Each structure stands twice: as structure tokens, then as C-alpha cells.
Image (tube, rainbow, N blue to C red; front, side, top):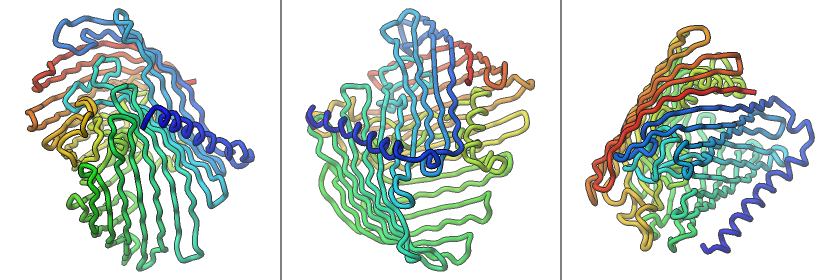
Length: 517
């Protein structure tokens, strides 16, 4: 796409926002009235880092000031619900003012029932600090400076209709438009158009489902052709017991993911969903696809004070989809599962999880993200195990993961710089772990410690290996129900065997204040 097309896409963004806002403005007060929480907060933090640039030499100590206002909005009315979490991290360096910046973080979603029980509009937005290459430094602290970091932004809107055809079946037809960009001018702007259709009968002893999915990905640089995929699937269900559901499926798909060459083939598979109790569930789906066997498995068991999860998947994904996949070690999700029995209301439970994380200084994720930037669809095999234990005084969270990523094309499209297309050649292997333990030492004071390690390895076209470690200890003390102070230290180490990248390490100490209004 050319500049004019980019402007047109941005105009579409504004039109999409207006499309969402107009029905909202027309809703009655009763339609949006409900349980809502609006929580602004601010964090002030001062850090001394002995190697903020994370370089081998020369090492220079730096004082870093962070001013982080944030706001969290959550709730639902009669026909509108939303969940918005935004934070702007203003970072000021004492002797590197050219690196001063604002790092944005956003996780937002909203659903509007524009026409009652028929027409709906979903909207979403995500902003995060992500990494370009799996072999570069991936420091846990956003204040550590690295050219491997970029701010990624994904926004989207998805209108859809859904309803019932009497008692025969339910249906949904959805259009999804998403756009993705970064603050790195070398990377292209990406937009995705997708149509999704679904019809499903009630499932008694037997049932059926029909699925349709058509997506198209386009770029504005390097004359990269559009990437498309189309899928049709029919599924038959058999439910001999309320706790067990079996299924078989078959269909057809077509795409041009292999070097933009159009290929098509049949698909077939099966799976099951087993829920022997409200606390335990197991799901597995197998399908023979154009890239070979596809797997998607998950096992979860929870008790009043613990949650245990295992997951495994092998499937094709794209850059846009990988950015919406959460990093390993989702502490908020584990705590949400533990709190489900004691706090059944989802809005109240989410607020309790956020307060628990904030008062103890626990990060939202205890493992480093494994996603990286690439212009090509890729096949990813991934396994993950997580455990969350919550006691009266002590909490422990552990996560371990491993992944194998293979691109469908051995090289980047012609004219694309290597920076926009890393990890070419042989499969890329990543693995690692994260662990976090916290202990309440007094009624208002919590001591916590965490460690993460991430490996990346590739044998071709050259041998490349890297390791990212991060260790930290922090002390949190509550001054009031809405305020707490914290202090601690961290250690970052980056080890590289790539020929053009140097290993480095840094140590930091920090202190700060958090207040919720």
C-alpha cells in the first residue's frame, strides 16, 4: 500500500470508532446502567541502574525517574460492557535525556449490543512493549534500553449478528477488522480483514456445527503480497454424558502461506471435552491440516487455594495472532481461577486480582514473552505448565514452557530488510521458566522474590543462541487501603553466542510509591 492507502486506513479507523460511539450515545441510561468501577492510580518510582544500556562496555550508571499514571474501567450495563486498563510510563534518564520517552500499555475490550439480541459490535485495543528478535536482549525492566524493543499497537473492531433459527440452530456472522503498527519506521503497517461464520444445533445426544473463516493480511511496505486463508468445516457432536462431549470434523481449506503459492486440501479430525467436576476440565482437539497434524490440548484442575494447568498446541499462526497470545506465566489468570469459588462475580473478582498483584508487587506475567516480529505466517508447537499456590501468608507461582517455530518460507520476501524478518532458516527453539514467591511478614508488609530465564536457539543459517535472565527481590508495605510504598533490587543478564551481539549485565535498585484514587 502507498501513503494514500495508509491515510485511507487511518480514516477507516476513525470511522470504526465513530461506528462504535454512535450507538452508545443513542442508548438509554438503563442500557448502560449497571455495576461499573473506575479506578485511576499513579506510581512514582526512582531507580539507579549501573548499566541502563545493557552493553558490554562502556558501562555508565544512570538515575531513572518514572511517573506512571493509569486508569482501570470495568463493568457492564444492560447492553454495554467494557474492560479498559491503560498505563503511561513516563521515563526520564538523568544523563541520557535523548532516551526519555513514554511507554504505553493498554488492554481494552468492549461489547455493544446495538440492536437488542441481534446486532453487536466488539472493539479492542492492545499496546505493549515487545521485541524484534528472539536473539537480542529482552530485559524485563522497561527502563533498560535496548534496540531490540519496539512499541506494538493493535486495534480492531468487529460487528456481528447472532441469533436463533427457532429451536433448530444458533448462528453468528462476524466481520473483524484489525490494524497493527509499531513505533519502528522500518516495520510495515499491517491490516487484517476477516469474515467468520458459525451455525450450531443444540447438543442433546447428538449435534452439529458449521464453520467458515476467510482472512486477508496486507502490508504497506516492501511490495509484500497479501496473505489469505479460507476454511470450511463441518462438525458432528456426540454427548453420551453431561460431563463428556466427543466430536469429529471434516472440511476444506485454501491459503497462500507457502511463498504466496495458493494451495488447498481437505481437513479432518476429532476431539473431546471432559468436565468431571466444576474444578477439573480436560480438552483435546486433533486435526490433519495442510501443514500436518494440528493439536490443541489443555488440562486444568483447581482447588480452593491452588490451580494447576497443562497445555500443548501445534498450529499455524501469524504476527497479529501471536501478539494477542499472552506470554507464559499469566499470574492474573491463575489468581482469577483460584478466586472463582470465593468471588463468583467477574468484575469484583478482577478487582480483587488487581489489588492482590499490586499490594504484593507481583508482575502480571512471570515469564518473558516468546513472540517476535516476523512478516511470514509460521508453524508453532508450544507446551506450557503452570502452578499457582495461595496460602494465608505465602503465595507461589511457577511456570515452565517450550516452543518450536518454523516459518513457511525459508527466506524473507525480496527487498525486506533482515530486521523486519528475523529467525530465517532452520526451526527456532525457545524454552524457559519463571517463578515467583511472596511472603506476608507482617499485616502490612510483603517480601517477594522472582526469577525468570529464557533460552533461544537456532542452528541455521548460522548458529545463534541467547539467554535472558532476570532476578529481583522487592519489599512492599501498605500505608493505607489505597497506598503502598515499595523498594528492591534487580539483576539482569544477557548471554549471546551470536557473532554480532555482545553479552552484558546490569544491576539496579529502586524505590517508589503507588496510590489508587
